Length: 247
Ligand code: PGA
Image (cartoon, rainbow, N blue to C red; front, side, top):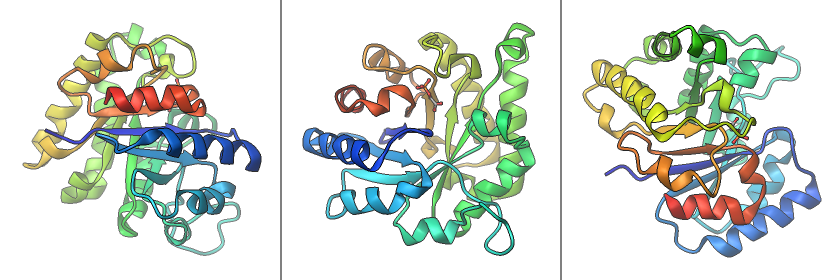
């Protein structure tokens, strides 16, 4: 059985003071977790949170984005080797907010996944359909297209990625996909991964989109849901810890 991953996506939230309170509360309550846990923090706080996480193995550090380039004249970008300098273990790539507000294409997302793999960071590749795509019956096609670009670019390295299915209409809206809806899409993604790699059974597929302390257990009980990508609920230590213990 795959060890599940619960990753918090803080998005553009936090402060030096709030981060310290949050991370200390998570560490105080986490015990010996039965799953992998990560917090994906805003880039300016990587150093701070790396310091707070030092000397323990239960909670790993993640970033929310990564440049597709290794170095050079890319103002405002953060490279994989810079993330590595702070012990970053995971990087979100292709979050729907990046696709929507920063014009990230499937191809750009695939290159970001590659940039992460190149420096030994595990990319958490986000895919998901909008409400209008779902209503038009395009969900499977959209997520398959998004994942196909990453498979095409990364070939056999695909076994080193984490996939996160996040229906855009469920993100931050309080509307969660039902466990059955989520499982159906996860099964589609799983079979696509199986077609690309003989080791696909080991690739974790997370669900994200209004996952919270109340609904996590039922979602995480689905056969192809291998963890969660948690936005809002990751900012409250008790909720985040409840989700982690459900995994
Ligand atoms: P949410 O965000 O849990 O607040 O819906 C999830 C995400 O965007 O990763």
